[in-house]
Every structure is written in C-alpha cells, then in structure tokens.
Length: 450
Ligand SMILES: [Zn+2]
Image 1 (cartoon, rainbow, N blue to C red):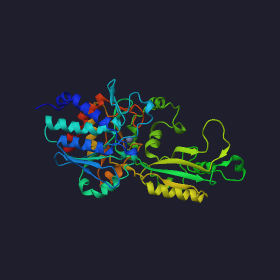
Image 2 (image 1 turned 180 degrees about the vertical axis):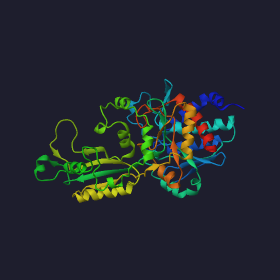
Image 3 (image 1 turned 90 degrees about the horizontal axis):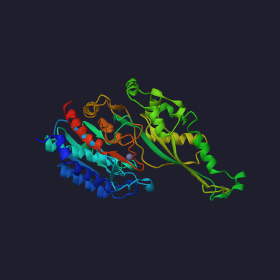
C-alpha cells in the first residue's frame, strides 16, 4: 500500500495547482463577488474526494457547503470558510491578489491563509488518507460557510435550521491556525465575542460657517465628549456596570497563560511600538490580551479633512467602534449597557447603530478529546511543543456552531506568523501547507482513538 507521505509527494504539483485554482477564484463576501462560483468549486472538490456534498441554502445568505465522508465511532466537524476579505489596496501587492503567484517557497493570494489553504489542505489530506491507508477513521462533517468575513451573519440561522445534522459531532477542527514567530504551532480553543456599532452625532441641518460655533452646538465635540466617557486613559472601560459582567479568569485559565511563550521584544519590534499599554508585560500582558474586553475606535469622521484650512462647522460626526467580548458579556447586553450609559449622561441624542449581528464568546475545555488529540498530533508532526491558547484575541462564529451545541472546538492551521491575513501580500509557506496534511492525518487517527 502506498504510504500517505509518498502519495502526497507524487501529487504535489496537482495539489498546489488546485490551491492556485481556489485562490484565483475571487469570493469576496463583502462585495458579493464570486460567491456562487466558489461554493460550487468547493462542493465539486468534496465530491471528487468521495464525500456526499451539497449546498445548503440560507435565506438571503451565501450557501453553506456541507459534506459527509468517513466512518467511525467519533464524528469530527470541519469548519472553514470559502469567502475572503476584499483585496484592496491593490497597489500594495507585490503580485496581483488573484494571481496566486509562488515566490520563495510561498504562495501569495488574497484569502490563501484566511482561509482557502486550510480548507483545501484538509480535503487533500483526506484524499491521501483514503488512497494510501483506507477509509477515514472518523466520520467527517464539513461545514464550509461563505460569510465568515462579514460576521457569519446567517450562520446562526443555518444552525437553527440544520441542528439535527450537526449536533452529534464530538469535536470540531476550527478554521484558523499558524506557526508563531518562533515557528511553534499555535492551537486555540476559543474566541472572543464581538459587537460592532456606529455612534452618530448630528447638529444643524447643514454644515455652517464656523462663526456660528459661538451659539450652535458642534456634533464633532459632542461625539468626542461622549467617546471620552467610554474609556479612561488607563485603558479601563468605564461604561456603567460593564466591569460587573467581566468574570475573573479561573485558576486553570490563568495557569494556561504560563505555557504561552509570548516573545514581547520581537513582537514589539514587528509592530513598531516601544511598549504595550501601561507598560504591561508577562502574565499581566497576556491576561489583558486574552481575557479582557476591548472598546476600540476603529474609525472617526467629521468635517473637513482636506488640504489647507476650511472654517466650517460640521453637522455630522460619527465613530465606528468594536467591542471584543469575554464570557458573560453578551453582544445584546453590551449594546444595552452602552445605550443606557450614554442616556444617563445626556447623550441620548447620539444615535447608536448596530452594524452587524454580534458574536458570542466561545471557550472549549482544555481537557476535551479534540483539544488533546490536536496537542498530541501537533507534537508528533511538528516535533515542537504546541502553544495552546485557551482563547484567541479575535472573534468568529464558534459559539453558535459549536459551543451552543456542546461541541468542543480547536483551531489549527497552515499559516505562519507573517501570513498577513486581511492585508496585502497575504501568503502561506508551501512547506507548512504540506506539513499541515500530516497534521490532519494524525489528528483524525488520535481523535478516533482517545
Ligand atoms: Zn478573516
């Protein structure tokens, strides 16, 4: 019987060509470009694997590509997404974002790291397994959505409509994952929640000559006064009652931080910053990074920002704000606390607009079977101790798809520390891509047994 590794070596060129083909199909959820084409491509690839695959429609949303293959006592859900971020700014790419060019052992394309390489690597690993070894040792359920980059807005609806299909999974291999700045594989067992709002302050019915500022209120000032009540200069969120809902990390969660090597010097250099907020370091820094919520002004706009001076008083000012959330701080609760907080201070004229459905926080038990299998598989394949994050600092739809159904999840993937997801020159290293196939094999075998 052909060995797993030699089958991969024999098919190396085709596997890379397939990845390039995936990356050359734009699938930009935010602009609704190429979504159907990409969904069909993914479904057909699952069929070529031998899976029973279909598109599951969700009203007004991009279809979910669903597939099943394999057998065994355990069921492993595979979650990925086939949509990508917009490619702009185009002139900052070394090669065009849809060329999928290969340079210096890396493949450069929009969406390759986030998330097409992870998606296809898993399918190709299963192909190699079936030819070289035999039937997959676990039952696989693929859930490949097309709206992750726009907040998975229809995924809760998909889960509600297809609960019976999903609920018997024993664990989930989540979409992302990478090697850190010291090339250690990173596994993550949870995500922060998120809620994203716009605050709009409005003044006169049109922009005014700025001499009117003596007697007419300026919405740009009102907005900044309101914003200044949300967080203080110590980076402490000061929304009324907000901190009451931030639960302290458990002892196990704190202990987990001790095993995370966070190379502060290298990371500061990479980011071009002198220090982290409040000069934090060590466990204190990681605790804030992973276990505390954020309130971030993502954008701030008002008035004239062109060249030279224009003595104008704007009639509109707005800010875009995201909140990354931790357990017990649900998106609805945060929205409610924010509105009440502003109203209590006389800012009830400032309109709070929810721009996306929020996502809840998710955390999987560190001793669950899927997490243990992933740790063992990573040790075996990468020959380095994996770094296990109890949660990522980012967000995703792990709560509705996994935690709400009682399915523990772990993320592992083929990115590297400079993959530049969402940014120009996004890439994966080809060697990591093929190593990732071995990880998938080892994970399935270990998850089947433990
Ligand atoms: Zn992304």
